[in-house]
Image 1 (cartoon, rainbow, N blue to C red):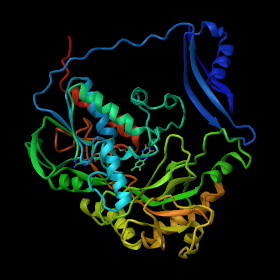
Image 2 (cartoon, rainbow, N blue to C red; image 1 turned 135 degrees about the vertical axis):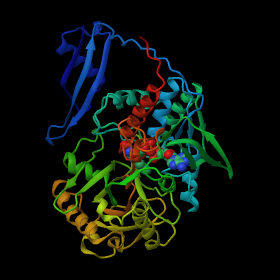
Image 3 (cartoon, helix red, strand yellow; image 1 turned 90 degrees about the vertical axis):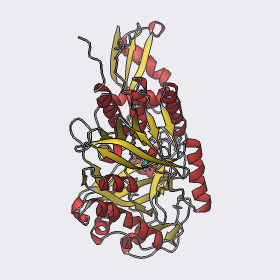
Image 4 (cartoon, helix red, strand yellow; image 1 turned 60 degrees about the vertical axis):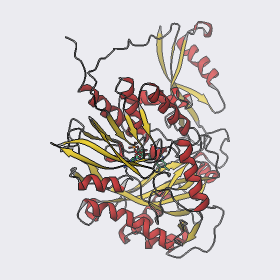
Length: 516
Ligand SMILES: Cc1cc2nc3c(=O)[nH]c(=O)nc-3n(C[C@H](O)[C@H](O)[C@H](O)COP(=O)(O)OP(=O)(O)OC[C@H]3O[C@@H](n4cnc5c(N)ncnc54)[C@H](O)[C@@H]3O)c2cc1C
């Protein structure tokens, strides 16, 4: 019999073998008879600082759990290809699904493959010369490749388990299948996306790296041809379907699509700073001063609604680094990443304020430029050499330019310059962030500590515009173009991957041979 056993207590320091023993005892099965054992949930209960422990659920049995039978689908494959713009989670998972269904998709990616992309990012840090097409936002694996790889999502989808299983199959640690806050790590993600690419190619799919999609032709309300540029050479491809998995940062592409007639609308977004603390201070705040060093490094998620604009933390990277994440020249953007072990000295997170669509000057292009202007202002404010503007939290709250760091040292690798951060954003954003920092400090006492560091700007939380799509997931006015992921339909790695799967399934459905 196979049974699920929930709420098993596991003390800090107890391993999975002990968990199995405890489960056998509750299930009243002798350990020697166990043929199936799977951890399905493991979450840390830190509500009482003197009794921190894990709570686990497992599936256990004295027989092997049978896999459901695979239903073979057949398709009338079209002659022209389905082309996917972007190899981020949305593009990657739509390509994987289509390739497995025999569609031989073509993936177009403006950045390099993971190895070359890593080189472009290192070159930027070493030379301050940005590759506009291959950077922390653009390149194989998309914006999330050099991230913390957090895989939690608020989206409830039957495809979540599928995505996690594929990550594990392609090299991620198995614990992502059961931890309640799984993360892959910036050091592991590149291997995973490369391995998925290899499977797609082995099934007949194609990848074109360093290739920019810069224009298209629309005939009778459908995309007929797309125009591409690689190494200065221009060429075109006829398409059957076009998946626009372009993420939130490809501003030139959004503008081109808008100018070609795609229906778009503005949406709310959020902007702010990265905030850095010592990881040890976050651990102490969350677990108590004498916390057990075997506990996982602590994280936090804070919101404050005391101001007219909501302020929240986002993309918290325990033991991580602040990264230069611009994809535009003469602009500064920050984001966070951490390796699988999360063993860096600092914790960092975005602390961002809600930007309402009423804030933008009217128009799609204007909304995109509104956000970009913060990045350009930050560039000029901090030396115009890709250093990032920075201020200690205590000084930011007092409105004074900092003169030196205390115990928290910045991790932004291109260097920081002390500035008045209130010069970057409108007063209403700054006032709300100030009030909210103090409010959040009431719940996490070190959060608004004087020596915590703010690095600016954090502007790539989501796109300020959305390509409007209908119920069949295609653009409402261009029938064979499918916006996916962070074009307005997801936020984060998991939800973007899930959206890519939904789009791929919708496309394949059009060609399904229905049996009677
Ligand atoms: C540093 C960093 C850390 C992050 N950490 C996390 C995290 O820990 N957890 C999490 O859930 N999310 C994280 N995110 C956000 C996450 O990466 C995105 O939500 C996710 O990648 C969006 O997936 P996507 O496929 O929609 O778009 P993207 O991943 O942005 O992929 C879009 C791709 O399209 C390509 N492209 C765009 N335009 C063109 C064009 N014209 N021609 C050719 N190619 C084009 C781009 O080069 C890019 O590779 C992080 C982001 C960054 C930048």
